[in-house]
Length: 387
Image 1 (tube, rainbow, N blue to C red):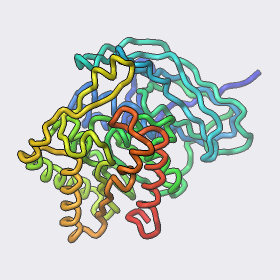
Image 2 (cartoon, one colour; image 1 turned 45 degrees about the vertical axis):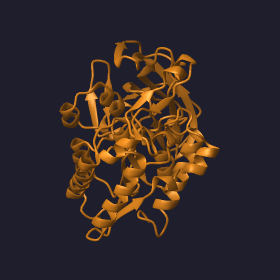
Image 3 (tube, one colour; image 1 turned 60 degrees about the vertical axis):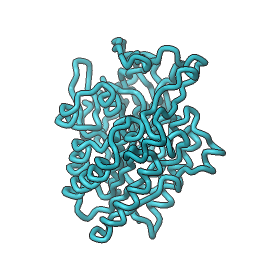
Image 4 (cartoon, rainbow, N blue to C red; image 1 turned 90 degrees about the vertical axis):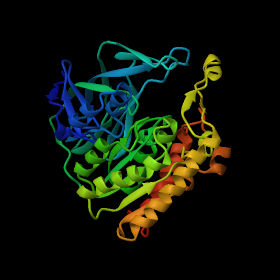
């Protein structure tokens, strides 16, 4: 008869999370600390930061079978096709051993036409991974990058201990839903996860779908998070939300970078501008859901701004790119560890022709792979900013 060992789920066996909330049912990993969440208690931000992109259980064990009880939160959009279940991936010594999904859990019904959301509670489920090789090994379970996940219990058929530090550098990254992993196939296939794996670094992913808004609390979170390498991908969410004009954008970028530098005065810091996105290259936001596409069962987005408003300082992707390049060039004169990367070097016009954005806003799984490979080649090369 198989004997199971239950291990408490604590911060010691979690990587990529900055806070762990005790709930009535288990524990909920967060990617923003409680004080930051309290400053802007917004439903969209709460959903994004609690979706555990880059968060993984990490432990060392001789176990050959692992069970994890969890409660995912599924998202449902009336009128849109059902979303695929989030994927859990188990890695042994850095290599994928197995993956699984849970088709139970809570449901968040989001009406994009009205901006309302309804939370419907559900039941936990159990993931079982068997056939792990014998002997001591490092095991990681990467949580779904796109489903808020409460962790209820971790069971193994042998004791576990926290995975030891391997001396790898920590890469802290902040960006939009593209960095979060929107449309990526699995949690290890988001472009930051792919780049981190290829470069052999530990990832802390603060890609927050819809919420890369130069928020001061995000900058302070980055300031206070231990890291060896830092990158910030700025622009698309500011255009999406029509959040600010050029007059506010430039000081906000400086302020964000100043705050990060308060905690990391000499770490390599890479500023990345937006990837190519035709609907917003020269058309300001806000971004809206395409109702005609939704009626046809396809989620698509469109730009609703007036290009003429660029004269009054409205932001487009080209405006953002030009200003970010200018800001970094000016600051780099006094900060030799500050660097710039044009997002079109990761995904540009020719890439769009080959791998178009399926919803006109987010890259697909193949494009995530390309972006991850190019970021690794550009940033982690021997002569690159993270070399």
